[in-house]
Figure: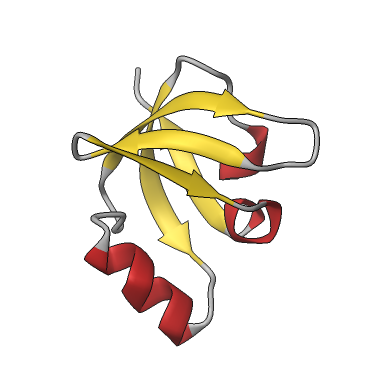
Length: 74
């Protein structure tokens, strides 16, 4: 499942990120790494996603959200 398809209010674990190295480094600096728990706060019809990661809100565009794979926490 990709971040773009996530349900609002659900908690997920990042399983992989298929992004350019520079984008990946920036997300890692913001705390979004493989194995991180994230909570989906909001998303819109254009594909942008607002999420909570390590206590901070983070907004990602549709292309980046489509490249992040995750698993739902059971």
